[in-house]
Length: 376
Image 1 (spheres, rainbow, N blue to C red):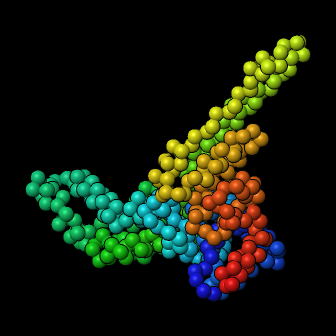
Image 2 (image 1 turned 60 degrees about the horizontal axis):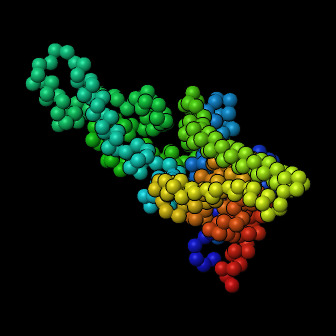
């Protein structure tokens, strides 16, 4: 094959379907075809934060074994191919992003600088608690030049237990590796430290395993996106209710007009009693706010969704929120899997033309057709 491989985004339900069925089931047959494309270098399949939160994490011990195996499935299918987290898109991060699906403010979940600041605060707290020190001794110990010596010679152990991280997930293997004490003693570079402390997070199998060591945490999807989903649901319901009230008022107007005509009122005069047209929705502000966060050209579909969904008859599902947020990645994809309802909703949205695939089993033929076009 010449040129770049096609970029494919699978729906969360595709992973679930493959995971739940027997190895000889139809979804596995589709997956086998996709893997053959991958093996030939014709496509790459990527995952995102939404896949991780929807498909893998459900922090109760009851689901541990299953979710850990789910993480391995994502790793087997996608490898180190990930769509960056939204804020990283604005900073220029792009697929495959070395498998990193989420990062911190400065591009890392834990940076050497952050860790060093935490280390310094803990050190200064320890010094402040020491008794029997005069002012000169205390001032000397508080100097940065003294900290490294203290860390090397006093057996200072902050960072060697999970509780030192204030609930941030870290693995026992990482703590046992000795990278933290070596970093405290200046025997480990910032780059080595950051690689070791952050690398597990880009590994779906490791992430799903470590996440269950913190099984007392709330559901991550609800924790991070619950308020936004509820706000979106409330906004849509308000718009739909307003539309229903307007339609009911217009029905009343038409009925009254007919009754007036039946009573002998001139038709021309009766037409002065006109139904009210719904005001156009202007969601440009919402689009601008989103694009300021995720980058230009990635939020127009949100306005399209609201315009469609605000009409009566559309039933909002909480999964709609996650679906339209994942669609911020469509510009990076050649084919994007979504359910039929979403495919129908966006069938007239020109920027998505030719990219949405409503059925998992239709994906191989779509890929074949596209590959045929590129070789003609």
